[in-house]
Length: 484
Image 1: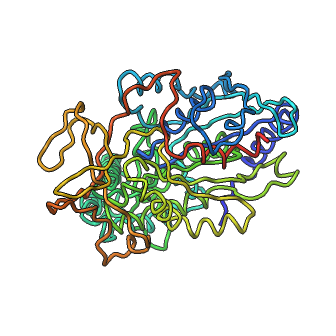
Image 2: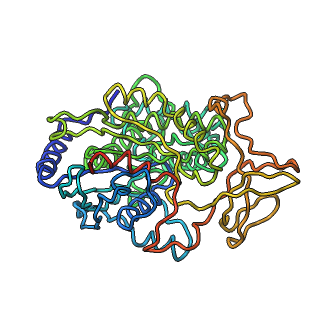
Image 3: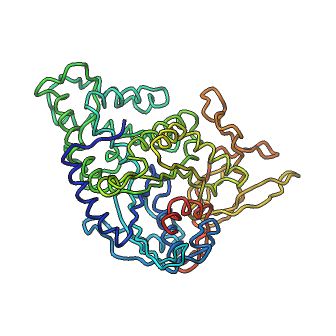
């Protein structure tokens, strides 16, 4: 069921959208949302996109750039003065000077580009591109607007008791049992249960489990709301009857509603409902590492993310009053951690993950595509002779502190890694009884079961093109028709 805001939200959204669309008749504007779950590479993608448009590079699939129709792209002041600016220059300096990846997205940020280009008929035009970068975890909160506290509790506890999560959820589940719904509305007890719940969510996100469906999103990135009552609640074992007045259950229910009103609804109203197009970045490899349970959880999370979008083809009225998202691109990031022989298979895994969501988007008239990419490529490919055999490998500099085969990397040495081949049939990875992804065994019988994290490549700079894998294909899908 599509997400519906209340009437007041709709009125505010309609008025703001109408003003923006009227302005857009004279100055065409496209608002592109960039999101993804934690560690999927949102900041890296946005930085690479801005650099590619402003500085150029090898983008053979992106027709407006390849044909020379883009004259220039310039940074301009963003439209929303109350929203932080995306720190493009700082992120680029971190990549080029420190050879470190920028910090993760923990809040909404914006940046505006004005692209001057020649249309296919030769006339000179401009397109204003507003980039909106925001955490994907916040998307998973949007269905809460239509969810009662009782339903939220039942759904959350069912997930916590599932085999893949039960061990890390045990302290939280014990706290729920000890607290009870009808116990007194005690602040100390509420804080204890909420802390156990937050610790459980954090444990689910570790590399070993790599779970994705972890609402409420702000519990793991609270920002200035940390310690507030709106973030001090947790699911309890509720029954069919409403919690009695003055009970712990009633307190939790009230704070759940406060979270929706103070956190979720403003995000929906101010940012999310105004997007035209969307890219969702997915760390598919992390789920592959963790196994079929993590893949199934990621599938449910991606299904929930697309269900939150108001997708479909825009009519004249919807484009003016309440725009729909006409294009959604799901991108499997870190394709540079695999040899190119597995890139198509990585795309197939992602296509399998969003299969149900893709069918729904098509029925509504929206375009949805998948791609395997690396917005900034950290490795190169090589053929390495080992044990009398030549093997496909990737070569890069692992981040310091990681360990493989008893060796701890110091962040300076370059190594060849044999990442393994994904199966031709993606369904094999989703089979709970199967072996999942096992890596490619070397002649000595060793295998790389987990992917290393690589440092950015040397030689990056403000003017030099950034190496990538299929960034141009993403730009072609998301932007090319508006530059035609």
